[in-house]
Length: 118
Image (cartoon, rainbow, N blue to C red; front, side, top):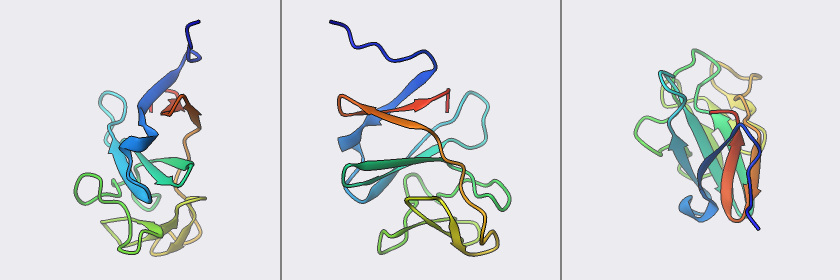
């Protein structure tokens, strides 16, 4: 029996392609300035638009470098803002009180899928 994904779903990667307590970036739709960032913590995967709510710049300063040294927060390379991984809430920096834009995620058969074209 074929396992069909609903229309409008985009496959990012296998869960195991992201290191435990790690993050990985993905390109956005054609022509988009920013893409997506996925963070894996155990069995949980959180996906956000890769754009700081302060001015919209990508969070990573180099490919796949999104996390604080201790791996507890997403960091904006432009301003040093810190975001919680589970909620995307900014806890320090110029956009404190704002949050990253979450992307709906479906994990199926070990792969990460997002709604829309990301």
